Amino acid sequence: MRISKQIVGVAALFLCCLFSQSAKATFFGEVKTGLQNVADDKYGYSLFVPTDYTRERHWPLVMALHNSGDRGENYMQTWTEAAKKYGVIIFCPTYEEPRGGVPFDHDNRLIQLKREIQNQYEIDPNRVLITGFGGGGHYAFYLGLRYPKEFSAIASIGDATKGSLKKLFTFSYAEVNQLPILILVDEKSEIVASPESTDELKRLRSQGYLVETVEAKNSSDLKNPNTNSYLLEWFQQVSAERETGFQRRSFSIKQEFYEWVDNLLQNR
Image (tube, one colour):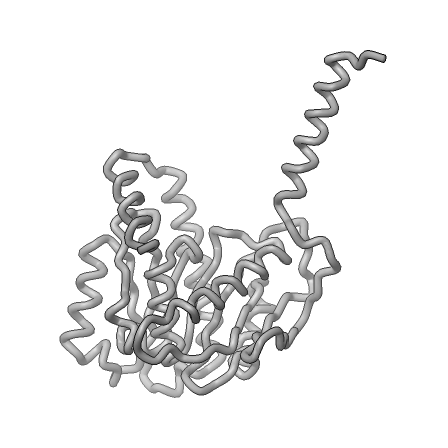
């Protein structure tokens, strides 16, 4: 019995549509909402998903790194109210602070966990913020610079440019990989007073990065949960501006070459 070419064509089209839709999300189980503390390895992580989560829209994701010596479940407590208010998914992993040498094993674990969350939930890849407090702010700053394709903005509370990972900062040449940066500090911070830190920020800006620094009057203000609301408001704004900028973007040969160079440097 012969099957007409028309039927074969329709079947092929149906399968094509089916696979294109299913390829979007690779997790088929029942998704959990609310606060989750997951102990899948010796460190574990905390995840908060708003209770009104739905697969009908794409959600922003915030990867928030705790201060040195703390844990993800503790840092998560400062984020849940802001997450509910602004409708974002918060990922707070517990991690071991990289001490000297090469931190790539730590990096790979965090990025792999982030990707697993992106496979389970409908995450907007153009709205993924990497942030952190204190030592976590320095690590977040490093991760955002070194792996810009994983994130869309960087926000550091406290230590940003100060720390052992400074020697591993990777600055991008391509505009698409130059993430917007927000640094929150107090008036006594070395970023404000240190010529070395000031020069580092000047260097970033001279290469095309959008870097904003905001000074708090007291260091205690940086620990206030309202600070996280401020971060999310900033993130909403720069995400919208960045998206508009990319819509107007011209793909010049120069920029394509810069992206190629970035790929070489980030994969070395």
